[in-house]
Amino acid sequence: MYGRMLKSFPLPALLILLAMLAGFFYGFTMICNEDPYRYWISCALILALLSFHTSRKDHRFCTMLLSRPYLLFVLEYLCITLPFAVIASVRHELIQGLLYFAIPFLIAVLPRNRSVSSQDIRPLRIKLPSLEAISFFRHYRITTVLVILSAVILSFASGLTPIIIYLFILFYAGTAYSQSENMTLLCIGELSAKRILSNKILKEILFWAKPVLPILLLYTVFNPETAYISAIPILLGPVIMATCISIKYAGFQPGKATPDTLSRAMVMLGFIIPVFLPISLIMSIIYYKRAIYNLNLYLDADYQ
Image 1 (tube, helix red, strand yellow):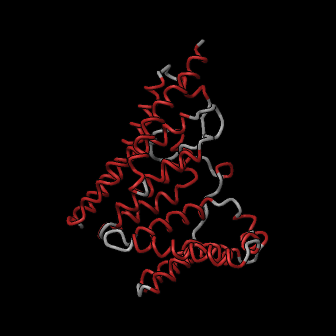
Image 2 (cartoon, one colour):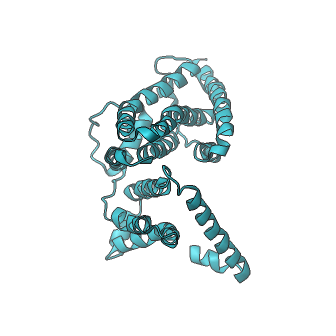
Image 3 (cartoon, helix red, strand yellow):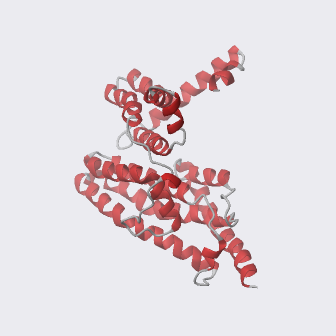
């Protein structure tokens, strides 16, 4: 598909496009190359590919169709990591280059999560704060465990653990709160819209504070000179949770997927690119007020 798309471009336009992409990758790696942020891209790639691989829906189809589906997965993931490996090698950062090159091979051999419908639906051994969290853990339990273990094991590395935790919070909040539940579940307890939102936000923050704060404390012990980086997930993590929950209920329609995916992506961009952070913070407040207004429409209609 991508090959056909590229063939449709005239040769000069294709060369310009490839040059722009190469410039983007090189500039991006230059920005994230300095300590303590030099492993930012590596962590983001590992987390993104790991999450995709462990939940991909075509795994069984590829296994039935191909004798070696592992090679197909490796080639797919290499298309993403190879540009970063080449840039790192050109910059004489051979260790990072080898890391980028090895990521597809390491991820492709990992087991894949089965879909919820085919899983052995047993009670999870931890108390989760919401139905959204339960759904997320049933799909991404392997990813979650690997991310937490990685954050603990790499706590000695400067700047790495806070980045891993922060990216995972972004992934969790953006993924878990993308589906609207049945209206009956919201009416349990007969709470006001503001109380429903406050309870959901507070429960999520308290739940994730239990594993995150000890890990960040461990990182601070090993890296006192860069301990200030731990403030990023501590301060922005709760805001990200509140923002994603607010966006979900601002476009809430019972039993349907949240339609405002573009707005979610634009707001989340501000939590990745610092220059857009003030806009995201303002939009968080706006979406919180919209969520209360939208929920009140359904709650008032239900009680009448």
